[in-house]
Length: 468
Image (cartoon, rainbow, N blue to C red; front, side, top):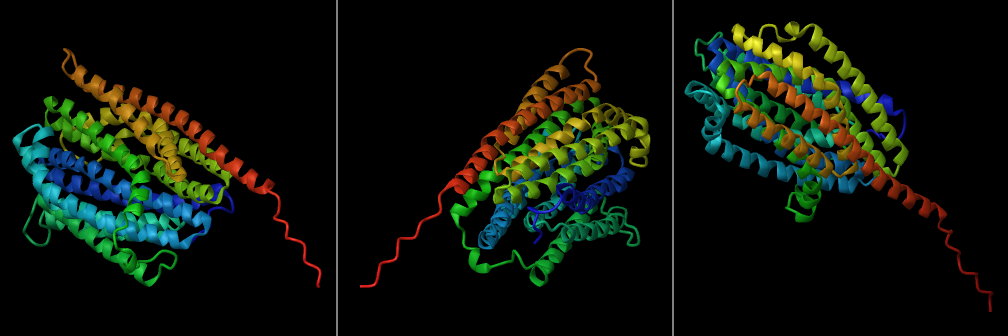
């Protein structure tokens, strides 16, 4: 366990962010590798895998419910020096991860084809996306366990083991992808099914590695089967913090689904280009997201310990560092977008769409970095409802105008990207305002409690009785 209530806040952020970003980038690289090898199967296969991957946002919403609730509550317990509560939250989160994983597996097998029919441009894309989802569902189900274990470690200030496990799992995925997709060395090409199977095998191995780490090396939080009996009160605590944060990812799913819906009249090349562009954009946003994720446990431990000034300092430092990173990557996307997109497709129309998307939407990046930071701070404070409100506002101000514009004469796909810039900027402004209000309520009240405790008079012992 690492005590984040002492020492330099900037030092804590900069020491935790690199392992987090390495772990996230390796996951994103895994998705890009799938797209890279699938691109040899044609634009319909790329569009199908990219559109199917959007379902991952919906599953990520459920993962965030557990991950955010676990991080916030364990970080608060660590700040209070309450190891017993930290272990109880962790073990109840493990039980929930098993239930959520099973539900995801069953829903995926039942609804994959129906989902693809609702957003895909043609029958070939529907078939490719459905096949990929069916083989990818075990990976999504197993990631609930990975999320809970990694979140528990991050709440205690430990990030390197999760990063190493994720990196190894991605290396396995990258090694398996060409073998299973293209049939390298075996002569049995599985196509898009191989992409999903490679991910599922890699995630399974990753879960096993994290289990070994917890059983052999982890000491602060640990598996206690006696605490696996369902405790509804603990579930309520986890879900109260996690559900609004999960709702944020559900809003991202809706946002992405609307984009695929309004682009489908432009054909598979438009959807494929958007899919490639969003994954590259997600990759270059990862450093700022890692900085925000590092700030969450720091804020959480200090909030649990009653260090209000360090909570505010954590936000200011994380926002400044994240903004500087996002400005650098915005310049890169503007000056060298082709370098970022090189090698993902040989189809000129697909790459033209991806290039247009990246050039325009990169103006979102500073605003998106502030949204990341505010979201992580809300998680650290243990109140994620404002995150859901700001995300819902973004979807509302984007989805309805986008659908309406798609029905108007002269509609062009760049209209979708410009509308996204406006909606994201509005969300960033709203997030900052909500966070300032939350600081005023929760940190000021915490400071008053501390002042009252310090001002309380020392109890006076009764005078000793004189001997008879």
